Length: 274
Length: 346
Image 1 (cartoon, each protein chain N blue to C red):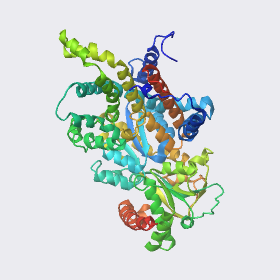
Image 2 (cartoon, chains in turn blue, yellow; image 1 turned 180 degrees about the horizontal axis):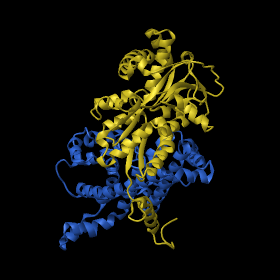
Image 3 (cartoon, chains in turn blue, cyan; image 1 turned 90 degrees about the horizontal axis):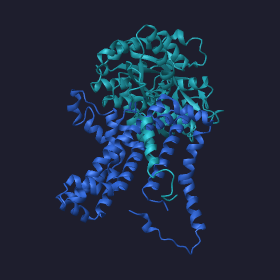
Image 4 (tube, one colour; image 1 turned 90 degrees about the vertical axis):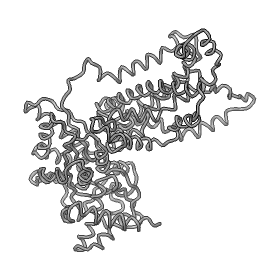
């Protein structure tokens, strides 16, 4: 996964022209829209920015999004790592198909994910119909948001961990087995330490994607203020209602958080940007 | 920026950062500093109600309820297009009360078995909480000199209109446009359809809710917007109206229907929910609605408010046989089957 392998430098050439060309087209595509969020957020001064942030709805939305992101990252770290381990270390029938299925969430539109969850867990859904009488109703509740995020972000952990596992020398594991280690001990003391970087990167990616998830969440959350409204839904609702300052304050915070997560990702997993 | 040679051990920054983030996000749910659970009302409302409920009605009810010795009460609310919240409630959203933009959405809830058919008619005023007429927003100074719905049919006028699929306001607007032509011609269905088709030929953008259409218009799209008068009155009162308002000579007064979703009301909160329902038709609540630009169901409370414009020939959905009939005959048959087909042609 090291990007350094691709870093072919052309020392002899002048970089000024192509580099400024890249910056030039990135300006309207990425840089200026991001700058606009911050300019709008701080247009009324820091006080207006703070006022936009401190409302109970904004605070709840941010906290709820963060908690869901933590939970999503935690659950998918375990499930994703286990899936990667199984796919990488065992050979079985249907393995290729399973490998495709677990990566499917990357390709499915998030709105479709939301719809499919509703049609399964919702009150008129296949399973939801049976759960309803028991008083269980995951949709339009925090559980529904978590389910949606687990679905959508599932492949990120897998994508970060499985390549590392595939490249890992199996001789170490074999050595562990020969000195009498159990499967669990081998996993815990041989595989896991090697995976640290991948686990960290996968968890961060999962966290970041969960924090910004919109398409599936909007379908399953019910958009209840102070109950199931995540930060992206809050931004959307406030923007639609014309409260651009309130929307922008939270948007700026989300953007800053993503910047920081991305920075940590680059800095601590040894994947330098250039 | 390479690793090594740092004062802080590598890896501490993310640990501290994410630890702090987790503490911040979980703070309200931690055992200390947590307020005791208060009884809660879950209220869904259509898009333009947000401020009137959140800033006006809910705080006033909280005050009254506490003053009556019942203790504190909390509100959980969601505001979106009337059709959107109706769909969410059908799919199981936990709303205890829903204030819908139009009675058809209440009918849809009844058809889906969520509430007993016509249950809202047993509430005061047949479930209607407040009203507001449909008006036209134009750019400041009215550069296109739009004076009535008929002027919206001229070539080159670009109209922002909410989407009838998800917006109750859009359904009202359709009946307003059709009804204005219908009544102008002394009750001629062909004239109603002609005006409706003329307007829809010029619809340049459809937003999911009346509020979203309004935001699009404010962001500079289109020449005219057809929406609730309440939006104009409320924004003018805050000095935030960035448009001129044209009162059509003939237009509809939208009526907003409350439904109680009994199956979502726990027994212990029954008295609270009933108390809040009664409160909505009380004088203080009705005055709040007027203060936020709606028209009260009590005419005496609307008097003395010149900001509620005078309309020559206001009509109501009852004039077209109620929403069940109007939805089928005007929205489905005329608008969807005929007007949309004509206007879809290039």
